[in-house]
Length: 216
Image (tube, rainbow, N blue to C red; front, side, top):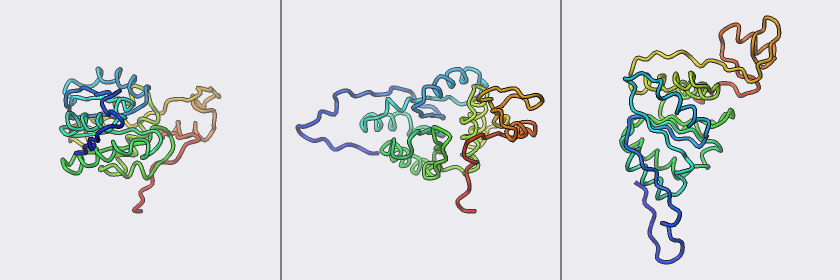
């Protein structure tokens, strides 16, 4: 476990410290997005009663190294699955990611790291310990957004990492604009996008394609 060396004089590390106090749980989700936290607050009560306990951590409360170390020791060390959603790439939370990786390597924890936006970041997602196909599916759920997609994302992760049997639906597209054009239905207004909707495919308008496998 990382520990910051104490130095005499200079900056007092205890000033302005924020410690995130939570009890351990099999699932831990870490994000800086208020929309993620709000959606999860609605989604979690709708999960099956048999679903593993979940903790949601606001990344903004885990900015100081001492705070990260404390949370890692109290919560992350006992987690079975950690989902980390980062906006700004690996460098945004470099120390925290390093601490998480040490825990994952030591405890064989399942780690899923996804971007906090629609921009593909292979360097970031490659920090995950689960197959890229699984990471991509989780990312698709969160890219589409909405309570139902988040519920299904959590079930999907549980099935793949904890061997549960929730069998969630695939990510469902949520219209960004809602422009109606005859029999095209709801969507971005782009004909190709709405053809995808008719074929029950996941439309990704003006966004990156699914994660390529760097080994292929």
